[in-house]
Amino acid sequence: MYRLKRYYQRLCSTAIVRAAQRAARWFFVNDTPLDDTMVTVHIPAPLRPFTGSLDRVEVAGATVGELLEALTAAHAALRPQLFTTDGRVRSYVNIYLNDEDVRYLQKDATPVKAGDTLTLIPSVAGGDGRETLAADEMQRYSRHLILPEVGLEGQERLKGAKVLCIGAGGLGSPVAMYLAAAGVGTIGLVDFDVVDLSNLQRQILHGTADVGRSKLASARDTIAALNPHVRVELHETALSSANALALFAPYDVIVDGTDNFPTRYLVNDACVLLGKPNAYGSIFRFEGQASVFAAKDGPCYRCLYPEPPPPGLVPSCAEGGVLGVLPGIIGVIQATEAIKLILGAGEPLIGRFLIYDALRMRFRELKLRRDPECPVCGDAPTVTALIDYDQFCGVGPAGHREGQAGVATEMTVRELKERMDAGEPLVILDVRETVEYQINRIEGSILMPLGELPRRHQELDRDALIVCQCKMGGRSAQAAAFLRGAGFERVVNLTGGILAWVDQIDPTQVKY
Ligand SMILES: [Zn+2]
Image (cartoon, rainbow, N blue to C red; front, side, top):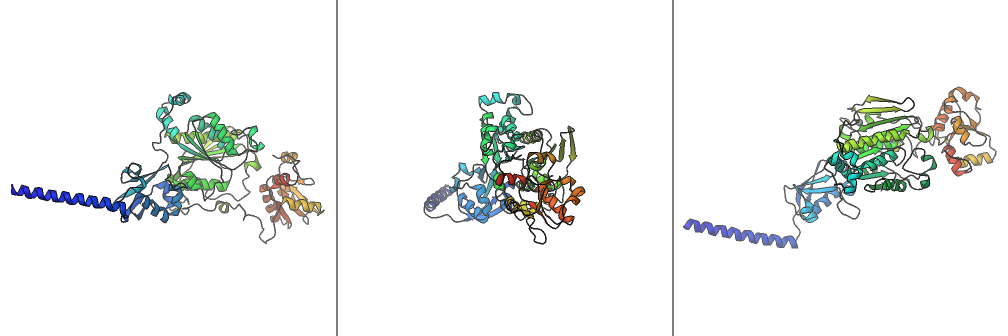
């Protein structure tokens, strides 16, 4: 009996002490700051490029909000990934304290204690990002719903998916339109161009009435007319090393519809660093290529082409031409692969490189293996952050402005016009094809297509100043380099080609 009484007293006293401690803690919590506690923050793969590849970071703070402040103070690049410009946590990032979502605790004010772990969970591909369908969507997608490989679950997955399309041009058009029609819930588009009349032969997102409008505004209207259930996110900007990671982060799949090498390497490297799949496609004249680069496990574009070709060697579509339906075929392959990745259906085009020849109507498939030496996805990657891709590809402002001896190797169209008006003797050498020369030309120029130059350059006057010219300046730069190599001393390249001439000097001529 006595022992029972003592036990009861002890129980009471501890209960009283506990209550007092609780009251004191409550009082102090509300009046004085809590002590900082060291807490481990787990960084998921997509956000590791912003923490110098660290997968966990120790930070001190008393609340979840203070930990996030300390984390982004230590890793400034992470801040725009986690917070909107007005300081709110981005909607595609969830924050868990131990195994609880902090939205259901006290949000930023949730106190932390030693031994806690904070985990950042951004939305990524292949998750359970499903969104329920409305009744009219059931009817719209009915031909999908009866496919066992899609079904209701797959269609909801498509609705929850986010696909980013780089470029709203030849490849971007069929990609965005078919993804929208198929019910991909969010489509992001990156472009900063304006619709030109010469785009309409293949860029079916845009119509005649859109000429002169921003490509993104035109694309948004076309997609809205096709499927109003799709959210279109417009990124009217030039993709760069400074913005690529932040732009890509919220998306599940990236579709590469770029038309130049610096951007293609940039897209590849950003996808590998973020662990995002890249549905790749490219087109030229009558030939197209497609593959899926599956980020971390590779292979990637650099496993195939570690280095870009020298500038000017591979002409762009603007210079070399492209069959109008070709981007349709390649873009639809990219859209198919993006949909398969979202559904997790079929065999993706990973590790396979598809080559399409429209003239012979033939598809060939090559095996593509991850290169253990690959600078981005290899065993010991040397590229661990985005680099200067203009410099890597040898183009841009610091490109071939000056020759080796410091002699100017470029001439602007205005300078050419002044020299012509002054009656200076010079040879304007047009190195385009005959069909192009028939469309427009600089008066007095002589035509010698690039391919004929090795055989015919002896016809040229070695003492004259030779101004090489093509459509935009790429082929003529090659011609100038060839002539200098053949001993011609006074050779320059006309910057911007005939297009710059028509724009700045002679707008009465047609462009193509
Ligand atoms: Zn690689």
